[in-house]
Image (cartoon, rainbow, N blue to C red; front, side, top):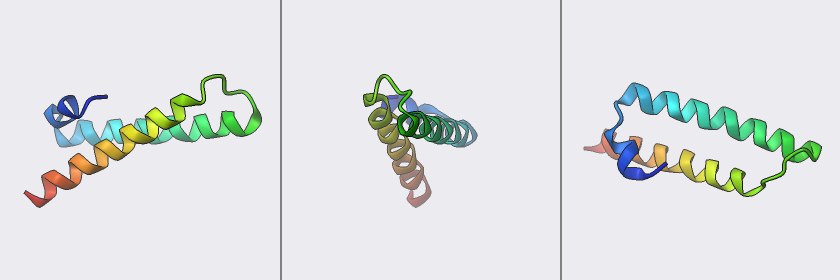
Amino acid sequence: MKADKIRELPEKEMQKKLADYRKELFNLRFQHATGQLQNTQRIKRVKKNVARILTIMREKTTE
């Protein structure tokens, strides 16, 4: 998800997206550990999305 689109979201929606991405990351790690994960690059993309959301949330609280 692009940073511009994240910035447009309201606070509640950002928190929901963050929870969804964290849940997905947990599931991807579990699949990777059990050898069921086909696309390992998905883990990297989800981690970046989590970091983007957290960064934008911090930016908004310091303004």
